[in-house]
Length: 137
Image (cartoon, rainbow, N blue to C red; front, side):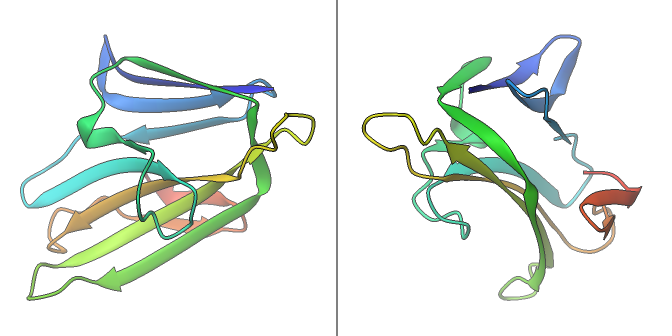
């Protein structure tokens, strides 16, 4: 049970892909238009505080998370206003579950895909159940 993360690889240099050993695939388009900032992070909490990996700062093209796979039943979406007229933020959060057989027990991890924008050029998306039905991430 493992998860691989491929980031900034040619010919898809503006994409990041998370793929676990169950072939659950989460892809994110980081291509940005004017006045927006798209990024991803992985942390031990759904709020993204104290990230273990922060996509903006990762210089490696592949990250291997041994003992983790996606929880296909966990998907959270948030939309909130940013401070001081900086626009809005859209966030989609997914859970990586640590193997129950690992010693020591692995904590759950959370993948956050974020897009901060002023509302003019933001990449929008609409969830229906656990699937994006309109727009793109």
